[in-house]
Length: 230
Image 1 (cartoon, rainbow, N blue to C red):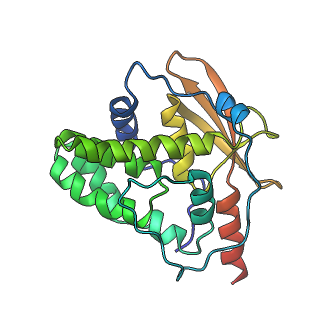
Image 2: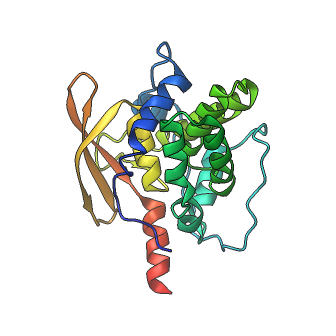
């Protein structure tokens, strides 16, 4: 399987991001602006050497302290990233289960998703929503912590306001998770091959203001280059 080009998530999944997000961060906790996070946490250099598929993935009980920056960078370089994170048939099924309020089924389906791809913020957000609805608060809070940790890690990479300071992502899923977290709706997008490659997204905020954000899909480009060379 190869990585998908920049694309919108399936329609059924998009409402879940906003639905679960409001539950996760609450109305009293507004999202952190990317420029504030990037200013406080300068990004580390990016390692661009691929990680072989046979390299074991850590097994988490979700209570460990995690270097989210380092773990995202390591996982994003995995040769089997697309298979683990973008090829799971249960991804859309989990979305359907949450939308119809079948939280038991959503819990069952999100467990293997976060195990296979622990760096996808949305998987943790959906699992948080399912567990919270089932009254399993302590477990839900662990995935809320992972969701917020992953989002903050992404936002440390740049403010996204220009081609010189893009938000660096390891996947399309991160781009859409960031937009949802910031309360932004994508109006249109274009991709520039660069170098560096850029996904330029025209967005609208909840109050109707329009702007654009720049994303650098460094790891997607790395995996695509490696796939083409094989």
